[in-house]
Length: 175
Image (tube, rainbow, N blue to C red; front, side, top):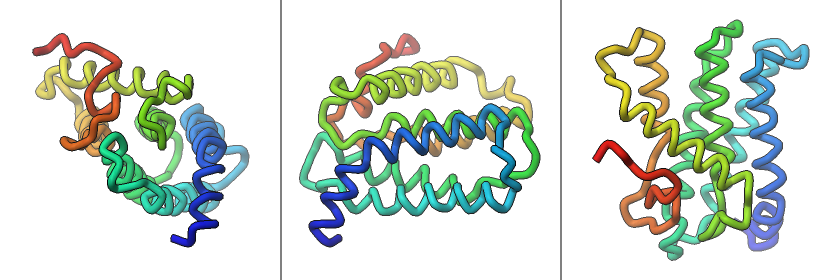
């Protein structure tokens, strides 16, 4: 990636991330803003393509952010797979999941400087704990799908030392 473009992408990252989260939260509320399914699909593709570009801005030598490209890639792929028809509660929940995971993306070792990122990281860990505690055998067919989506979204990188990969927000009480 060209150095000037990379600098611009990094500079715009917090605002772009916040805009994507806002857009997904709006969709999660059932408000398409008058957009049809085709327009919504186009907007989801735009977010996906931006996430793909974000995979190129991470410094692979930074042990604290080794997870960043993988997280972006997972979210990007899921955005392209969204079957946007209607406004089922599960589709809305999926948009909330995507918003939460985009919201926790950070280019900093310590996300303490970004309150919203820290909040989303904490909410994500709490949700992970909730999925971990709930017996998968009791899931209905929609919950099975939601659990599978969550597993794809909630990734950690074994070699990453960021607070999210270390699970520093919520103690794992299931151990």
